[in-house]
Image 1 (cartoon, rainbow, N blue to C red):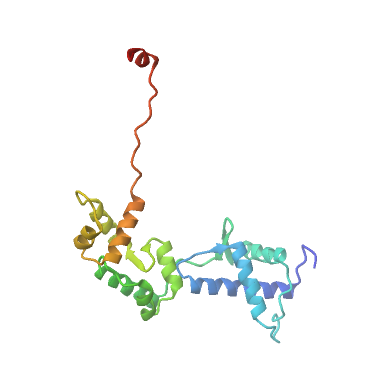
Image 2: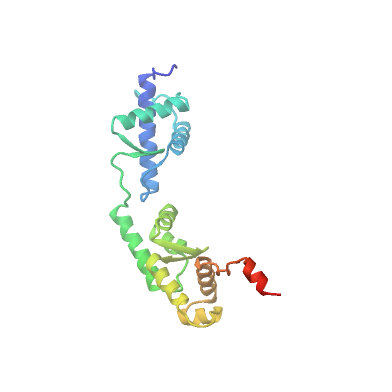
Length: 221
């Protein structure tokens, strides 16, 4: 197949697979808007291998190579079906959002974590009970709504900011036992909080080296 002449049936197959791949992506990651072109091409290729050819018109197997598939995507962008931002592609009408039911589940999750204050349970366990998929948790972390300070320890962003500020404002020596008692939390959580606060703290300033001037050297004899 020569560049500049994509078979119409193959174009329809490719367009359908591209749109299916993007819709699945948005369902899996509702808080993400777009994905890289190479990731989209990989998803389409995987989808094409998993879907056996059907008997209806346009149901043939995908035979386009990667360059031709990228051309189909470019044409969908030109037609306004897809939108492009640099190397990233999305459905033209896609917005970073979750459906109302999932939004309620996320709100329950965040409310429970806030109520736990400095000693939250593992997010994965609560999310599983509420029916929140791991991809949504990953996106909450990536978006800054959840702050993971250690494996199994996540805080809502505003809770973490308050805890960090309290630890940083403690006068005198900040020990593990003191943080545990001040925050009314467990030793495991106190260790993670101390480590996260220490990572954020700026390194101690070193005195700047100032070479002695010739006058200084003459004065010391």
